Length: 358
Image (cartoon, rainbow, N blue to C red):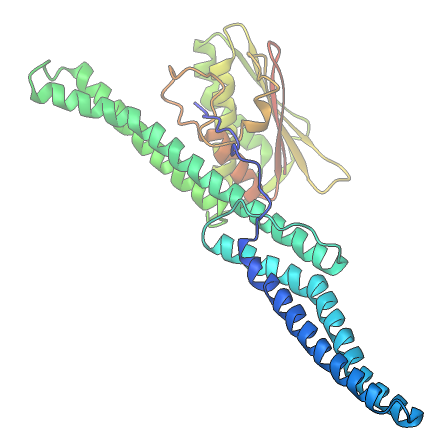
């Protein structure tokens, strides 16, 4: 069952920048010394002005000499203050935010600045942190999902073995087969997780060959025809160009379509229909479109955005334990590895169509 993990309850908060007080402490001292300096020069200028008040020429020269440093200091302080507010403060905020992220706080965001240059930097930084936060949340969700999925079969195996050791019941074929089924489920789950991990990181090896698409469709139809007949489901196939060739990993593509057909068989009632269709695409980047259509129960619109997530299951109950819940996630990654796309259209009560473009 897919476990929907609600988004982080706390909205991304704006960084409080507690450390930036270090920068702000500069200004009180600066203005204090500037005030003392100004009083000193002002006093000297007043004294000289009074001393040379009878000599206008000398008086003006001394005024110029005394006023010039004061003007320079005023201009310097104003310039430093302007540069700090325009460049120093945003950089200080950015450095503090980087320190916070390094300490593991991924909820930090930097407030946008009036400077266009720093705004672009801030936007990119915030986007990077958002991606890191999302990846961290996905990792946490994956860990919780794996623990949840492994717990049930492990408990069943443990319970069966303890029951046998304690003499609660005899080692009948039913008990042994039940334990064996759970170990097979664990093995399938581990293998699927490995495949998914390799595919997501681009490390899954593909072995592309050139083959007739009609051969793949025929093999799939033959493989599932008996199961479909047993369930009372009409399984059909259709291909508009029997000579259509495809350059892909035959086994991996077979795995994808097998997953989709298996899902369709699980969710299509007796008397329903499943069709496997292939058609050529002309004038587009893709060369072929493959559809797996069923007339089953369909998927709720609220669930559609999540169907390719790990451990998502269409049936919210856990009665069908043969399904690892990773089939669709693996299918998506295998199609992406082929530089293709996979989409889904569905309506509750009418059926589902998976569309693959390669």
